[in-house]
Figure (cartoon, rainbow, N blue to C red):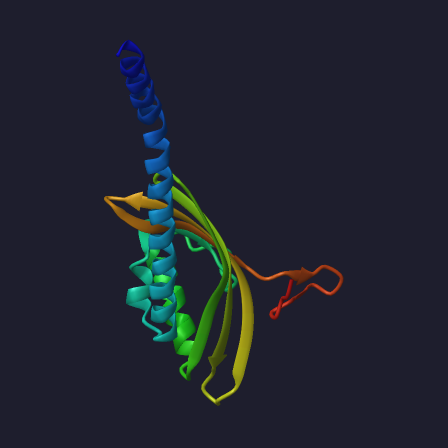
Length: 169
């Protein structure tokens, strides 16, 4: 009887120490799935050219380095104007895909990197295709994942100084 009690106590102690790590893993997986779903919604908003919907994924104090000048967008308002300007510059159809998405969640912070591949149509019907590397830092604020920092870039050929707008691995 004493051996059974000791065995039961040992099992309870073992479960007490392993259960939190299992639930933390499950929580991280759920957060990864939630962020992945947010990228699907973000991409849908991009393809609809909906600057308001796009900006709903960003924290009020977001900071962004983008491929479009100026060097930095230090506020939510400045980044929203960037989106509005992009959509005005390319009034025709546009499409974007998000690929190679990698998500890492550490508590209330996550970081991601991925590739945006888009085709935009300007006023005269000319299409431009661009491949952009993107990195986001997310923070869970009041239960909602929001991007607090973003960095978009294209590789540059150092010999010519020209950007590689169609970068491949």
